[in-house]
Amino acid sequence: MLPYYNNAYAKAKLIGALLKLEKYSVFTDLTLNLDNKNYTPDISLYPKRDVNLSLPEPIEMIEMPAVAIEVLSHTQTLEEILDQFTVYFGAVVKSCWLVVPIGGAIVVYTSPEEAVHFTSGDVIDEQMNIHLPIDDIFSTEA
Image (cartoon, rainbow, N blue to C red):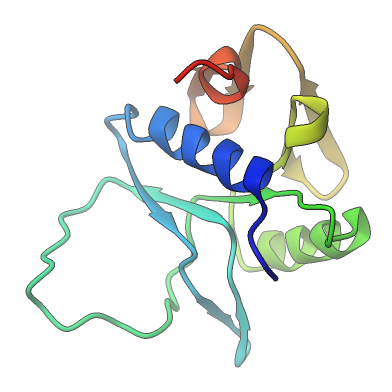
């Protein structure tokens, strides 16, 4: 998939907001190996960990993130992303977020059947104890 301007900007803004969370480490485009198949969420949150950039790194992760985040682009279908979320939940990912830049919305899934939509105020992931002002993600100010 080719990155697109608005998608890339929303992703960058979201990463900036997530980096302020002290209890999580934020990774972008990290390959997850699930049953010998690779998946690459746009953003993965893991409980806070040390990262030593001088050590060899794994090519793919077997340990699943606490949160997997996908930023919808116009080349993806909602069905594709929701199918990925079902796989992630089956692999014990605790929460999945769908970011919709064109709608200025974030949908927080705590299971394949449970979701909360946010378009204003704070994005709240109760399960992960995350609260982020949605304006930190969708404001167009630099």
